[in-house]
Length: 186
Image (cartoon, rainbow, N blue to C red; front, side):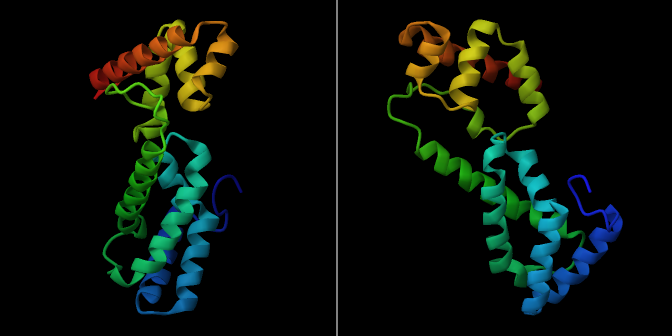
């Protein structure tokens, strides 16, 4: 049972989700509970969130927010198309909300330049990995430690044996290079 529900093929799961969601949309609280359970066991919501969010540690948290949103908006489900099609805008809104909250919590000592933080990007993880791999090591390592591992600049500098000012400049330059690489891809 790798990452999904082994009892159902994708098509069978889609049919079951549609039936249960249609019942839940009529106000059937048992069906709503069953829908949430099916989505959770099949990891459907988690996979959707994971495709939009780089910070894999946040996937469970955002998925829980999606489940809460489903509970509040199931009455709007009309049964047209797959449940995942109906879920997509909900997932997207919750991911965007999560990223906004993260951006609001960035410490003031961060450089005030237009830059992209790994944790703030909604993009293909493969594209990000490829773009990061293209960075020169002197930018790649500080950027990974700061933006993915979320270490304070002082700790990044200590680990790399470099002055803090140098590390800040390398992170900033790495972000700029990453943004350019990603811009060239898109």
